[in-house]
Amino acid sequence: MTAESELVDAVTRSRFEWTIDTQVAVVTYRREGQTLWLDHAGVPAALGGRGMGSQLVEAVLQTVRRRGERVVPVCSFIATYIARHPEHADLVASD
Image (cartoon, rainbow, N blue to C red; front, top):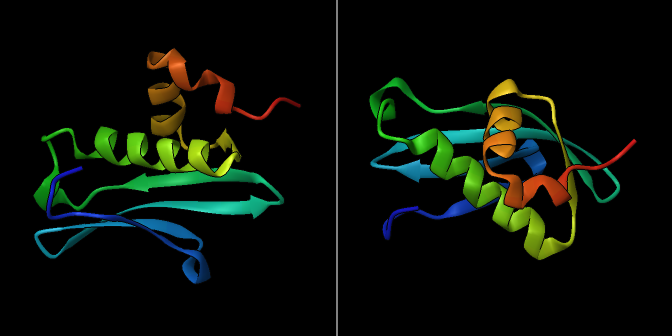
């Protein structure tokens, strides 16, 4: 995350929002109790190719950890990110 950006949990929209230079990157989710089903990560094309998607997912996972919640990574990008960063594997809800 950059100094001028902040991750916001827009609960009424069921998504995390990260605004950078007037562009909004998002991770959408469905909540079931203390578990978030992370459905989609999206970064505007204007921000593409700079690692913003990875930074966004990292910020979301850190927020989930601070809250004591768990995730189900439905989005393939998020699932791949967690697989490549095993320090977040403990956040994945088990069946």
